[in-house]
Length: 263
Image 1 (tube, rainbow, N blue to C red):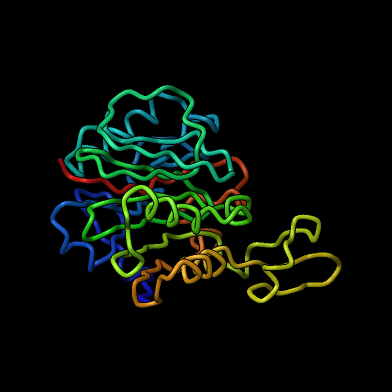
Image 2: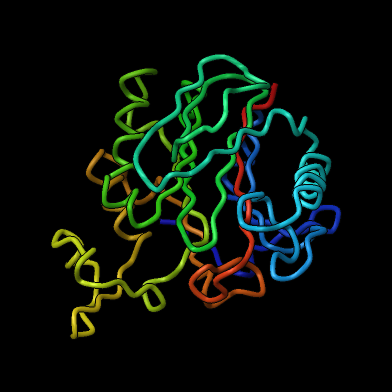
């Protein structure tokens, strides 16, 4: 597994972001895991907030979206954002679409359509990207506690195989920043027994859980090998100067991670 840390932070036109170095060899795909920095929003949404559902002014959110599109040179109308439901619904796009019916109540997207950019918004949850190098198919996944419980990552990989005949050995997977195992405490009433091997009991019905590791196990169960996985192993709670963290801040913004097939 390839582990990235803060030293991998890049800067493009004053916009900080992370990317997977090996993925730059693919000339048909573009991606970035953005931070909270480089935008126009005011506190507590400072500054590159891409969500208009948390109290930020829509004008600031639109300006932030346009900043991202300009820096990475794509049409902002081609960026598809979801009304993430913390479930396991998967949106399949087999042709380019500028306008889609709203709300898009999904937590994952899969496409082979050119000039299509898939966006995931997070503030502690886990963004995951998947690329099939041979079939030229991409997927973007929002994996929070609920999505992880529903095995959304495994379901996306299964859907890619059913719809596009994607083989596990042809896939590259990247995990973006999310809340780390030492900062994510949940109650026993929402804890699943299957999570115990990758969790730490604190007693009194409290558990510390590792979202990233649990999703990695789902990938392995679908035939993905560790050498196919890259992980930006940064805790959003610990690195709140770089990332929005709902657990730490409560009222806050959402950072964007996007992946797109270049048209």
